Every structure is written in C-alpha cells, then in structure tokens.
Amino acid sequence: MIKETISRLNNELPATVKLVAVSKFHPFESIEEAYAAGQRIFAESRPQELQAKVRRLEEIRAERGEPAYMSDIQWHFIGHLQTNKLKMVLPYVSLIQSVDSERLLSAIDSWGAANDKVLDVLLEPHVAAEETKQGFSPEEISLLLAEAGKYGHIRFKGIMGMATFTDDEDVIRNDFASLRTIFDRIRSDYPSLSGSFTEFSIGMSDDYPIAVGYGSTMVRIGSMIFGARNY
Ligand SMILES: *Cc1c(COP(=O)(O)O)cnc(C)c1O
View 1 (cartoon, protein in one colour):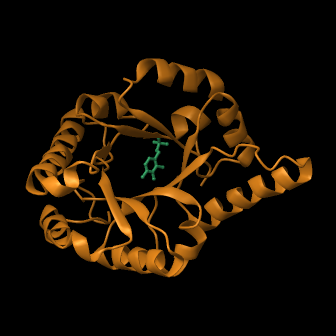
View 2 (cartoon, helix red, strand yellow):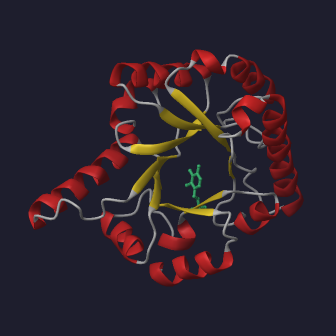
View 3 (cartoon, protein in one colour):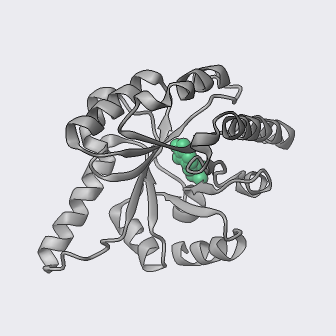
C-alpha cells in the first residue's frame, strides 16, 4: 500500500512539487518501506520521536555493518518546537518547516552560531480559523524579514501553512489564497531574499490537490501514505 500510494502521488504531482512523507506516529519499518519505494524526504512533528527514529537508523546501520544504509534520507521538522528541545532536532534535519515565533527563530540562530551550522527554515504564518494555532501574522513576518540580516545562521527558504480543519472547500481555498498572498508579498518586498525564498509548503492528505492549484512546491502527506495515526 505504501509503495503504491507513493508511486501514485509521484505520477500525479507536477515535477515542481516535492513530496514530503509525514511519518509521525508510524514505526520505522514504515519509513523503510517508503524509502524502498523511492521516497527520500520524511517529516516528523515531535522531537523525541524524530530522535528515536534517527537512532533506530543508526542502530540498523551498526547491526548490519552498512554505514551507508539510507544515507540520503532527509528529515524535516513540522511540529511545534520548544526552544529547550533544539538539540534533539537541529543536528538531524535539513529543513525546519514550522518556525512560528521570533523567539524560536532567535534560538535556532544562536544554536547555529554555537554549532557552526546554517539552518534552512520556513516561516509559518497563521491564517486558519482555529484559535489555538501557532504562527506569525503577515505583519510580524514583514518586520522580521526587514531585519533578516541579523540572523547570520538562518537561511529563509519560504513559508509553510495549514488551512482550517474543515470539509468546506471554499474555506480551504480562501486560506490557501491568503497564504499565497503572504508568500508573493514577501518575494516582491524582499527581492534580495527571493532567490532562495522559493518554498511554498501547503497541502496535506485531504487538501493537497487544492494546494497544488495554489502553487504549492511541497506537499506534506501522512495518513494517505501510511494510514491512520493512533494518537
Ligand atoms: C500531521 C501533519 C501533516 C500530515 O497530515 P495528513 O493529514 O496525515 O496528511 C502535514 N503537516 C503538518 C504540519 C502536520 O502536523
């Protein structure tokens, strides 16, 4: 099933859209199965779980004496990240998609300075109707990017967004349109960034076909590939 779904998604998605397999709450074996089907980018939302999976992979490499096993796997982080958990995440990920506050951004920048590493990040604006969602207002993003130069160990790669959790397609379209406006505005207001500010990460299992219509460059698909999650 995992293999078939990945093939189907790869056939269906335009070449400009990267498939990110959201493996949270699923066992390492499911990741191996997806990897065997050609999937390379995986996303996790909880620091402990990401770290456990990275360690599991290291264990397997050691057991088999195959240090290169799955060596081109890429991990993205897509969950709420507390500043006291950075060291469980930042050494392992190629992209932090869910930077939702200036405080977190500053902490990532400091970690990068201390560890001599430049971190790729997406900023997460808040457009969905849910009150509890984390994220920046468009104004906060503008203020922050006006001072982008002060973050010497951050590379701003784009934005990540989520639509309101609803079956109402009009609401979802409206949210994706708002995210698109934010993305386009940043690219035109900050031309010095726009060469690398290219990722527009929208779309999940239930709404990715709509997201592709709004110019998504990265869809984050979990349950459709791996099945329902047992929280
Ligand atoms: C869990 C999660 C997804 C994947 O959701 P599915 O509906 O299972 O595809 C995508 N993005 C974020 C930020 C998530 O937390």
